[in-house]
Length: 288
Image 1 (cartoon, one colour):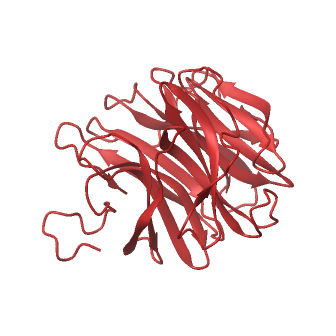
Image 2: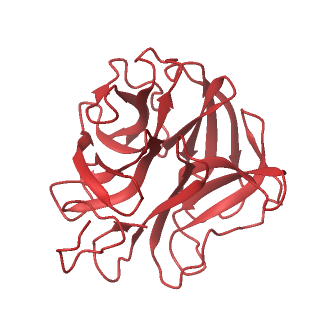
């Protein structure tokens, strides 16, 4: 991607210019990996968040596409996820690519939708946004949505808790459970993810819940922790004691790592994509 640019990483993903952070909306569709990401196209520091967009066939060579989502009257576009609506449950068209993301404005965070009918090239925001209004909590963000049996599940980060919601159509949501007071609670929880993994060499499966934590990592600062447990389609139960802390890595320098770990639509393996920035070295960020 960057063979002719001396100071740009050749392997790690970087935006065309300016600032990026969390990867969003990891989707594999029709032979292409779609990487959306938090993007500030007008400065080299965090600011008015957009969703950048790139595609790849091998997760190494990336093609930059136009900005997918821009701030609007409801605020900046924070993190979220993307699903393919194979059965047209939302009414935007069969196989519509649907983004579920956090709107942020004046300290309030709410959840909204946008959809694409041309494989993510252009996007239309849902006229009824937000679909999940702000509950007047300071932290209520980063929706991870996936299909479970015949309904949709949403995870949201809220302080040091993950909230669960269910929906038949991605538009109308009902609370179904919560998970918190486990592991590290030294910092705010962010970017939750939930997926099922098969134990190597057998047929037994476990659910894995990941959250980024704002502080408390052994190396200092933020990190990503995970929980192993059970999921019944509505709520998650950890198999470990509340005081058990499981870190996704033990990096040797203070950094902010916001891991998005999800099963790409149409794929057969979980692919880890995370953002890494080292504040002591430079303001630039890149994606592993």
